[in-house]
Image (cartoon, rainbow, N blue to C red; front, side, top):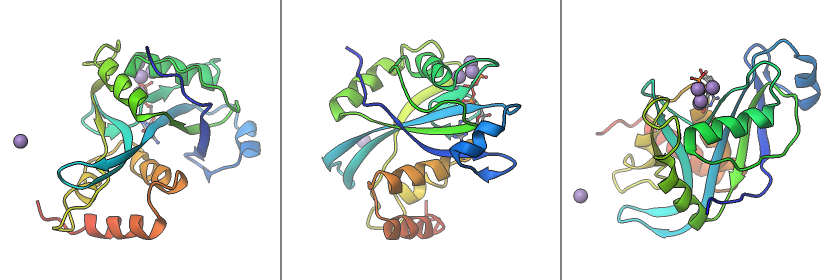
Length: 196
Ligand code: GTP
Ligand code: MN
Ligand code: MN
Ligand code: MN
Ligand code: MN
Ligand code: MN
């Protein structure tokens, strides 16, 4: 069975022209194109052969060669949450029946599930309608830093990301307390230390 998540939190609302905006401000922007994407993650105790797992965070390789989160454009007249549900169904084969505040501009959601649910979701991703078309494979973000102070998360952050997906990933790490701010800063510094 597919996982049933908690009601997600909207982490951030961003307008291309105005930057970070509040819920009240987003209500005034009626003419804007809206997009909604979601970070699905699960706490993940234990270690890989390369470092501590900490969390399973789902991103995917997009048709354009960049990494991003599942989600997409909200159609004209479509409710944001309905649109996010539709894009999640198309891209990862999962309709989690999201509920949250409505009528925002650019929406970044967080959905915490269990590792068991996460693993089940990953298996189902290849069966999603857009697999092989918009989406070229789901990935887990490596969250450790190896002894060379570059391999793992610092190296991963040197990939190309769509839009502000990289910043959204860092926001999720910080907001969900997966990684303290000091360590995020350190990882960003190490990611400049290109070694591979
Ligand atoms: P189509 O169904 O082919 O139209 O694509 P889509 O509806 O799935 O839209 P997509 O996911 O490509 O998102 C629309 C736009 O939102 C993209 O062109 C990017 O500018 C932006 N975008 C895509 N993914 C992300 C993401 O993870 N984070 C952020 N901030 N923006 C994203
Ligand atoms: Mn091998
Ligand atoms: Mn899509
Ligand atoms: Mn999409
Ligand atoms: Mn779409
Ligand atoms: Mn589409």
